[in-house]
Amino acid sequence: MRIIGGKLKGKQFNAPAKLPVRPTTDMAKEALFNILYNTYDFENCNVLDLFSGTGSISIEFASRGIKHITSVDKHPGCVHWLKSTAEQYGLPEIDAQRGDTFKFLAQDNNQYHIIFADPPYDLPNIPMIPELVMKHNLLEDNGTLVVEHPPFLKLHNLAGFTEVRKYGNSSFSFFEKTTIPYL
Image (cartoon, rainbow, N blue to C red; front, top):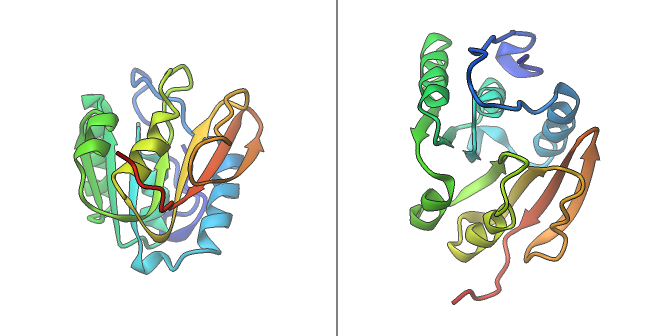
């Protein structure tokens, strides 16, 4: 994986091949960060990176000056690799945690400016991610949830949906905080 912006721009990271990941492509990552960087003051943002894998998105955020990043993944090898990489490159803003994303969303009581989720494309309950984020009020006012998913999956009917953008074999669905009460 390659970092495309910030203090680590151009840095190549070679995660162990045995990790079960599908990193976001450089083209998609660059487009995503152009959108987010022009919307938010990164120095004052808290980010939640769900299904963080090797931490490509977390490291990209840290490279660009994000205040704090909570990275969640259930694979111990991924979490270990991200923790060691963050330590090696002096990225204390990354807090890599091992855990089930859905349990984390149901129990977390923090709010984030940006939440990014890159679940496995074959995960059947991807639509639960925006539902749990909204239900548990995890977005700051004017916050954004971005869910990366395969293009055939349509999330436009979920609360808070604002737009979808397609980049190759990936789509990003964007969501904003809703005021719809959940029971």
